Amino acid sequence: METAISGFADLYPHDRLVFQAAFALAFACFLRSGKLIWGPNSDLATRLTVSSVEWERDHAVITLLASKTDPFWQGVKVIAPEVGGVKCPAAQLWQLTSGRPPSKPLFSLGPSGTAAFPRTTFVSTLKRAIQAVGLPAHSYAGHSFRRGATTWAARNGVPDPVIQLLGRWNSDCYRHYIDQSATERRALAASALFSVRDGPLVPDCPVWCDPGTG
Image 1 (cartoon, one colour):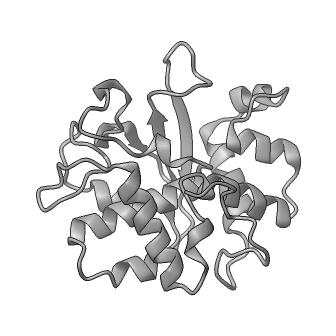
Image 2 (cartoon, rainbow, N blue to C red):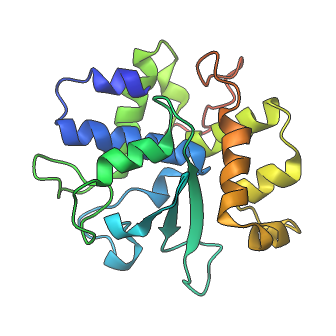
């Protein structure tokens, strides 16, 4: 999809970077679109900014400021591994954030890079990119990256506890999430999602699809 988005000439160059980075991050970190999008009336405290991203040698650490599994609003850190290639979430984030002020929204649209990043635009561009690579777009929506990452990892033999850890699901595996260092989680994400690289990230059945209408 990254290549398809690069060909969307009607989008501003900055907007193409935004969608490429947002989609790559959503997949790598098992995220719903709601973690990334924001509207004009969104609470500033829940909006990702450039300063939400911290850089390490081989990964980026992104602090999600609000989460239903974070009742004390302490922030949840997710890891975007550096894996190389056009699918690399860390590389996409680096391109998007380089030279931008820390207080600016991480994902924002328009020629000035300050306009909102609403769910409708996220989903419509996702569907457009899906269609551009020859897949049926009507079944994909805001949860598709989280569902897709989960299924892709399972299809590649990743153990259930690792999938639960990377997806941050509530279970006894929360202990592993607490104890795992960022470096260890970076390695897990890179191995679970990007070890198979001889073809597109497309399972052989419509498991990425959202059961809703999108």
